[in-house]
Length: 189
Length: 149
Image 1 (cartoon, rainbow over the protein chains, first blue to last red):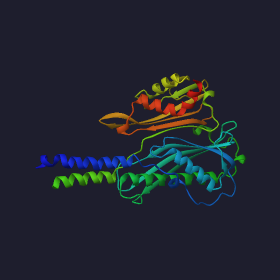
Image 2: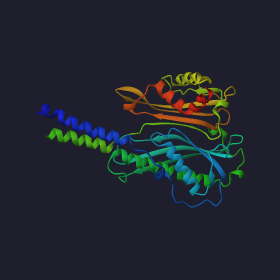
Image 3: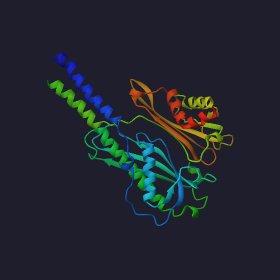
Image 4: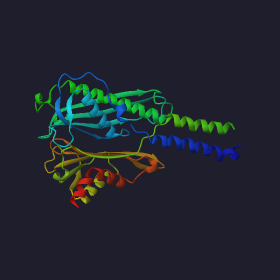
């Protein structure tokens, strides 16, 4: 009896698994979900103009969308007046993904993201600021019941939290042209 | 019938509980950086590298026209214009394969990130280590190598 039914239920199981796999491969972390949104504006610009670059090991985070969310959040927080990636900005904010912990299975996904935020003077490429930012977010069922969607929502939450914490650290610096060149630990890289 | 229900239930549970990463291939050169200014590259070999990834990167950089060498992390890099670091992640699915490769190029003296690239391929779209290195470096140096041809 079991052998007679074997092809049918193996086929159904295969299609359910395939559906799960394909759904997972089509989910992308979005800019809108990773942007910090409405925040208290900084009292002074960190810099009038800065370039922004994101690198490192983003795992399943879409790096272009993360960079777009970062730029939008920087502007919304009033930390820069303008982001200029043409190559002429006097400062560069460089964010590197150092570690993104992604669980394989679970009812609720907890995502940990470690990044390094560095600000350079682009004229002599000297390091002005270096900050480690660690964020955690546990997603529930706000992404629905399918695992890959819940994973995406939890990842977006951890990325959004990482941006929020990074902006807080930048807000504490004040104005960049007041930061002495030897303020950052050059050995931190 | 009970077996059928059980298998479908287990498959559905797997679908609900599992997370799947997307395939990704990115490369980014920092604004204002001309990679052609950095001809002498030093690939910093990680102590955990038992798959010859540093050598693959060094070889490919040489093919792209750069003067590349590899070795362990050093106190200082006076002969290098830029450092090339990498993180490789491997996964087992019938056989071991490279799941993800991230390569970063930074100024050898200041640590200023010049460029970085990342490729992630899950099992069904897996690439060989050579192809992963080629894809990441192609995304980073693609425009520079096209310009020199």
